[in-house]
Amino acid sequence: MADYVQISAQISEATKRRLDQYAQESGLKKSRIIEEAVQRHLEAVEELPPEYIIPTHMVLTDESWDMVVDLIENPREPTQALRDLMQRGTTDPD
Amino acid sequence: MEPQIRIRSLERSDFRDRLDCGEPALDLFLRQYAGQDQWRHHIAVTYVAVEESTRVVVGFVTVAGGTLNPTQARAAQIATGGYSQVPVLRVARFAVDRRLQGLGLGDELLRYAMQIAVAQAGLVGCTGVVVDAKPSAQAFYERFGFCAFGLVRGPLPVRPRPVPMFLELESIKEALGE
Image 1: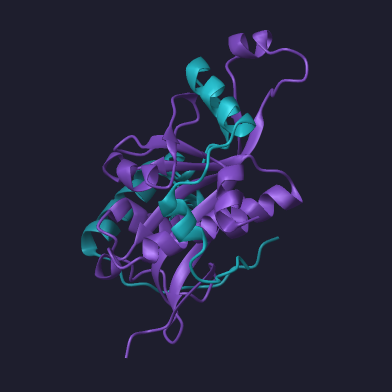
Image 2: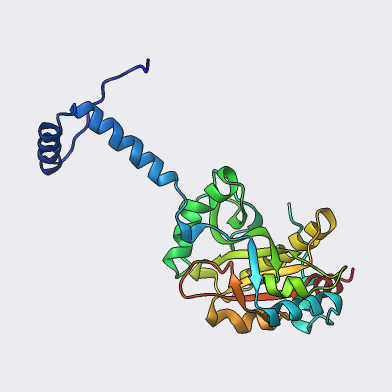
């Protein structure tokens, strides 16, 4: 059985009124409502929204696939900007 | 005195809430989701440019392994021995604080990501780097040889819709003198 502790928190009168009304209408204990609300909040902030997921499987249009394969098989000479970039400094990935 | 800036992987004690890159979604990503991607979901790693004395993040690049694949119809036409998919390093997020934009920090972060791709090629295989360029930044990547390509699946779900671009690894290695 879970251990229970008591907490005290200041909340707005409006929220308190809504809590009282919901508890009365639903017949649920206020402590249960509060615990579930907190748990759901904590779960929600740990969820990764879709816009922050990084797709790793990329399917290319046929024309683009052929282009990429050609670049892999027949690599180009690096541009001067790329040469300058890669030969600057000595920062190594850690 | 100019603050010393170092690039390394994100650490929990870094100050991630002070970045102002001009795009709130990227600031939010660093503040709230980069750590989750890295430590909880293990789907990407964020490399940060930090002021060494304060640990304040002033720029970052988030990278993940990925694969480029043909459509099913195209795959059916590929002869035996041809590529059925190719591994790449995907630069999924990239930002520099407004105070430091235009001073070369973006170049440094991109170079760091390319060095990771070279290391990845030696460890597990990598044929190139994919960036998801903001439309306004496409010319920045084209200078380095990145080519825009079209995706039918797997674009980053962000707005404005980024332009995926590819640079082959051999070109990067050649530029490194390897």
